[in-house]
Amino acid sequence: MKRFAAALAFSLAMATPAATAPFQTESPVETQVREIGAKLRCPVCQSENILDSQSGTAREMIVMLREQLAQGRTEAEIVEYFRSRYGDYVLLSPPVAGFGGIIWTVPAVLLLLAGGACLLLVRRSADKASRTNEEANTLEPLNEQRLRRLEL
Image 1 (cartoon, one colour):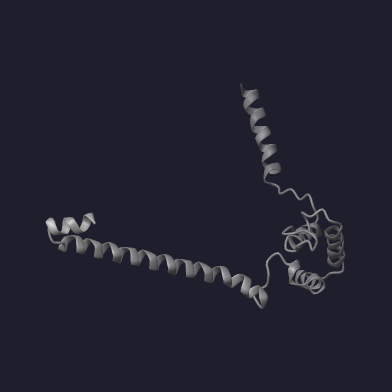
Image 2: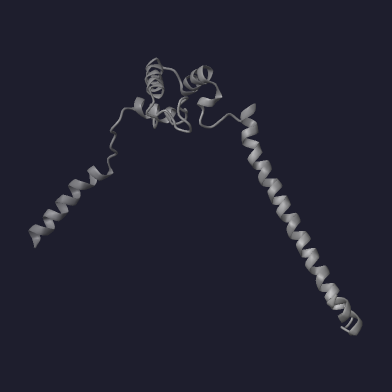
């Protein structure tokens, strides 16, 4: 039993540093390639970033991205390079300025309009229900004359 306890303690002591040590399987340059590539849209494909796309254009863009990182360019410079070459379409998140501003504001405006219309409908429905209740309370009793009008 003492041997088992000692073996267990030794195994835990040896496994703990390995479990807490971070594993780094790719270089820092590849990490940057993945971060920047996830922000760039493939110009051939629809709604795919250049990392997920299988097109030749996307593969060329990744090679160019690696070359520019090797030259020491920053992320902003690289994104601006691709933006100047392919336009705002190459960005998965369009800029807030210009046409991109319209893309960002239209959903918010439509949501506000839909909320206002919903509120208006609820208020009208509540007003109509209250008026119906008031009319029901003030109606005269059913007599022969009203009964004949209802039958026609």
